[in-house]
Length: 215
Image (cartoon, rainbow, N blue to C red; front, side):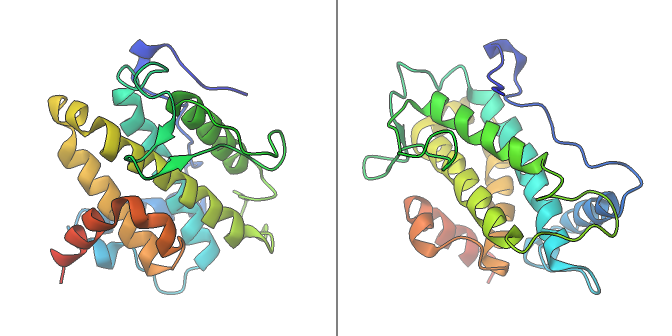
């Protein structure tokens, strides 16, 4: 199912909601409260006594929603004409494959790639066998590898926004929002070693700069 909305709607995908009253909802509230403290390194740490898979699941949903909103603000600038390939600067280009519907990587425009990507992520998050929302239902054995693939692909949306659309982000006065969201994302994936360093190369300078401010 495709989620490309009309350009005026300002959100790219429907928000993924965590059911109120569930344990994951309580975890999300805990995450929001600790984020409010301003210490992002501390905010991403696994809360005492909590399950690592559940913590990663809750945060993955949250990052999907954040990127969904951030990309939604600049969709009018990310078009077939302006972004005919999915890139993060001149040295990095991404081709889409999901291993199921599209097995051989295809070259496509950035808006098409991001639509494929976000649709694929939404499908994973909606799959109760991968992301169980009910208490007592175990996470599958391959959960961590699925979560790593989701986060690796979500990173590419940040990379594309920073490299190709940062001027638009500044015009919209969204740079503080983007920087805080990305910093939170990077500290989280670093804390649990969820994305290979080579995958982070397109934004390595920014990552080092964000990290140095917290030492």
